[in-house]
Picture 1 (cartoon, one colour):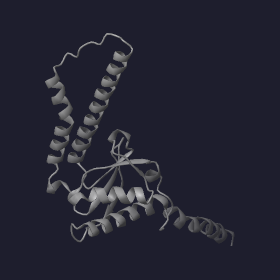
Picture 2 (cartoon, rainbow, N blue to C red; picture 1 turned 45 degrees about the vertical axis):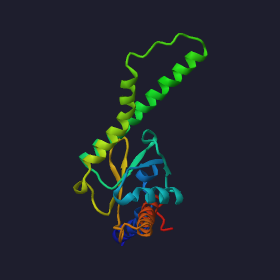
Picture 3 (cartoon, one colour; picture 1 turned 30 degrees about the vertical axis):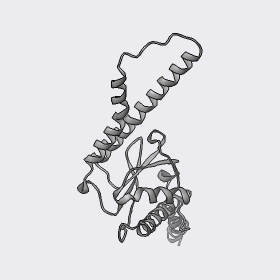
Picture 4 (cartoon, helix red, strand yellow; picture 1 turned 90 degrees about the vertical axis):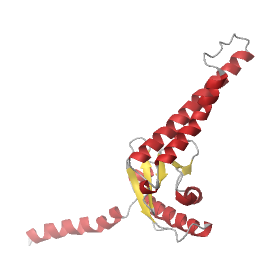
Amino acid sequence: MARLFVPALFLGLVLPAWPAAAEGPNADLNSVGTVYVLPMASGLEQFIAHQVAKQGIYEVTTDPLRADAFISDFVGASFEIRVDDLLKAARDKKEKEAAELAKKEAEKSGEAVKKPAKKAKDDDEEADGGFQMESMASGRVGAFGRGKGNIFLVEARTRRVLWTGFDIPKNTRADALQKSAEKLASQLRKEKTGKSK
């Protein structure tokens, strides 16, 4: 009788806890605080960003350097190139802004300011470089690079896919895109919190 009692006691303690653990919050999703939403087919990113912010799932940022994760409708090599180009353009912009600020502060304090080695024309080309890079990167992602209906949450640092959702909008009208984004955001919130509502 003792032999049957121990396994039965063990199962009685383990099984009730099992469903609760399976439906609990996703630790990976809770490690994310800020997301950057990449451009998507039919402008779905605008609706996704709206729903993610409205439902309080994550803070949505327009600065890719602040993002803990990216929301995208594609992954793979084209995603890597797109994000790397986006981050490089954002870093270059920040460095240029910092240099301009330092120059203005030096002028205010009366310090001699060294003239930049590059001509103004070169600076204009550099300033335009972020846009060109982003355009080139977006050009690399064709219809074959996108998984229709798939949405991915990708960690910025490790590039791990933390979550994926699926929903195909009925059409490209705003109301259909809104419904799809609402459904996807609800799926994400449910997995993040472990709660259905």
